[in-house]
Length: 220
View 1 (cartoon, rainbow, N blue to C red):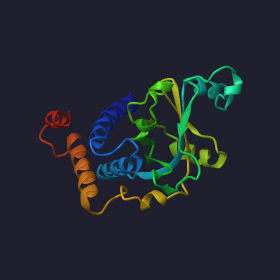
View 2 (view 1 turned 30 degrees about the vertical axis):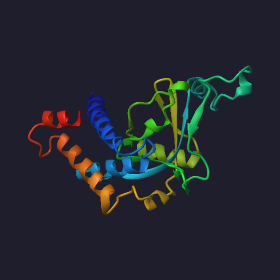
View 3 (view 1 turned 90 degrees about the vertical axis):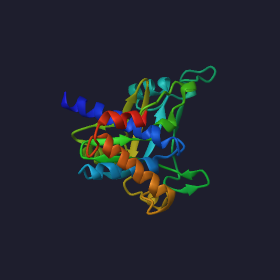
């Protein structure tokens, strides 16, 4: 019950934060989203850390096949024309490199038993049955062990989202994201935007804010 309450509170806040971010950033903004989230968690007294991950999102048909057989569904498994729900999207090799399109990787935040992916909505593809509207918030008491096991074995951390499946494979050795302008900007518009969002989120939590309702109306 406590975990569910914590999850609801967190998701409500993370939805609002993401909605504000998307007024300025594109959906492909995992570095900025994780930067803001880590700053907020630090202000709340937690000890978060960013974690680079490779991320694959499987559409429903491929997700079901993966759950049963441990591998995605290939076209030769069923024959016939291509299926819209047999689809996968994600970041792949060369992992952690910068190119014209941005950083080739994905970033999430870890803090104790909590994993948060604020920008997983960038992988939503409704035409293929992948519908992801909200951030992912995974509460797992053994989270640090799960991450270490995933690194050691290569097995992904699987999170179902509706009928799709999000698979994270931690890449803790990768820190190239820290060279991106969206990671902890020290000055300029990026700094002002992230600092303002952290301040608003802090006040939304009711810490130093006269009324939670007033802040909620502002964010709506």
